Structures are given as structure tokens and as C-alpha cells.
Image (cartoon, rainbow, N blue to C red; front, side):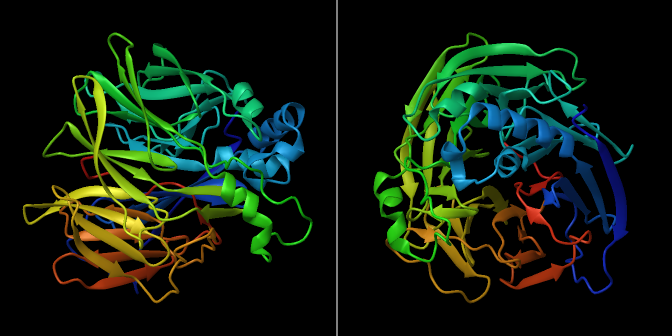
Length: 446
């Protein structure tokens, strides 16, 4: 059984009705799931073409499902999943992509045993894995390239150990950091260490010596209500789930040459993604989402936080934070510059985004996309993601446009005149559920 059963490539010109800014260039990559298959769209603004790729992973998911049934009691399935297949797809969903110098795209999944390789030019797909079929390991969901060698940096965590901790106490897990040449010849283990959760992001720091890693636990301490009726009808069913709260996660810094590790517990819930400052390379910004996942919904446990920190002498320090009452979910943040000013843009569920001044973390603008009732300031909030609601955010090469994407729409916000427009129909294969961070392949990312 091979990981890629088959792949279908296609290309489609931009619809004539699309009004896209003429100075918007670059390639925007969007990934997700459609009818149980991986589905990818590469929006080429230069050529005004939408390239797409659909990859069948039914065989892999079937084998993964059998492993789940053999190693985890259904009562302990995380995220409120009710079937092994539903749980398998929680791990197989695409999460973030990066572009290699030769144009190939590598997509990390949400902690299954492989990453996806896509070559739109040659119309070929492959997988990055030590094996051609399912193995009980969890590859990190966001990875990066080594600044010195160009190797692919990723982490692997023991899945059997992780399954043992679902529905119980948080256990230490065996995790390893690897580098792999992008001809996929032979991996090199850089470090072995213990974590509290499978690694979410492996981020090469501006200093090639270090790699920053984050954990991201979507499972709450308590199981979701075990009822046959709709559990969201009665909020009282969730009182124990809310009171027991979320797990503590850590951030790690690894010296690639010595394997030495600094780790820090993060004081805010569900830390996920790290972005580094281009003006001050020792400074980083970590998104803390404050959410869990259960019964097919993401559940907000309060407002989100953007945490500012530094890395100096191999030591992580947290120094500042931005956490207003109107900031929720925070699935993406992006550092960018426009007219020589440096900003950070943050997604804010359900209908806003925030633009901060990078140096001070002061709010520059809070923009509303459309009308929507506000998220309550207390108690749990169960997210319903409608087709027009964007959760992923990017910026254009020139910094002029903030770009947001939902399952159905792409929004363009003009920093210069504060105008907002959107286009519909990029997902021309039909119903699509976006699961991956949107990536501008023409931009420079730290």
C-alpha cells in the first residue's frame, strides 16, 4: 500500500468576474480536505491561474483507522470523535506548506507519519516518510528549512505513547528532531528529548544554530459529554469540560550542533505558531489560541494571546503580550512591512482582524469584515465556521494587501486606502474544508 493512491491535477483561469488588484503578484497556496481526499489550490496571481491537486489517501486512512481501533478504546477517542476514521482524518489533514527552491511544495500534515510532496510542474505527488505505509509516529505539523544546509527540519513523536495519555494524565513522550536533504536521501537525527505533546511546529530561527519547537494540544483535560443527543443544545453538559480546563504546553529551543535544549512552560493556553522579527532577529511572537476540539467543533475557552519573547544565548524568555477581549482563536499571525513601517496582522474569529505595530504591540487598526454577533466574554464558545468566515491570513509581497481565506472566499484588504474586496470560486472542485495555513510562496518568511 502506497501513501498516494492517485492524484488528479488541473488548472483553471481566474474567473472573468474576479476583480483582483493588478499589483498583487505571487503564488498563494491553500490546502485542505474534500470528500476524504487531500485537496490543494495554488493561486498564481502572476499568471492569473488556479492550479489544483487532489490526492486520494483512502488506503492510508483505512490502515490508520485499524491501528486506532487496536490501540485506543473508543471512549477515549480525543476531540469527541465517534469513529476511528473520523479520528484518523484529524491527524491526516494538511496543515502548512513550504516551497523548495526548485518549485516543489512540501505540505506537513497534522501529526500523521508523513508529509506530502507536490510538483505542479511535473504533475507528480510523493510522500516524505521512512516507510511507504502507515507507521505509528507523529510528524510535526509545521516544518522549515535549515538556513545553513537547506535540509528539511522536522520532529517525530511516538504515537503509541501519545495514545496512552488520551483521556488521562499528561505523560512525557519520546520525541526526536531530524534533518533531511530535500532529495530525501537519508535523515539525520539531531536531538532526542521528552515532550508533553507531539510537536506542532519546527521553526528554524534566524540564527542557523537553533531550532524553536512548539507543542499544541487540542485535547482538553476532560472528555466531552458522552450523550447520544446533540451535546451543544444544553451548555450545562459542558461544565466539567470547562472547569477542568486545558493542558499546559511548552516551547523548546534546540542547539543543532550540540543537541542541548532549553524549554519553557507557556503561561497561556494552546500555544502554536512562532514568527520571528526581521528587524530584531532575536525577537519572536508566539500565538496562544486558548481552544480545544470536540464533537466536530473548535471550542474557545476565552480570548487568545499573542506572546512576545526573545532568544538570547540559547535561552527563551517571554517579555510581553497582547490579549484584548476581542481577540479569539488567532489561527494565524504574520509580520510584514508597508511604507517602511513594521506591523503584525492577526486573525480574530469570527469577523475581524487586528493590525499591531510590531515594536510596541500597540493596536494600529481593528478591521471588521462583516457583521456578526460578538463572542461572549465568559464561558465556552462553540465555533460554527460558515463558508464566508476566514481563519487563515497572509500578506502580499509588497505588504500593501492583507489576504484572508475561508472555505469559499478570498478577501483582499488594502492597507493604503482601507478598502476591502473579495472573490468567490477559487474552490472550483466543490465543497472544500480548508485545514492548512495559507502561504505566500513569493514572500520571505522567517
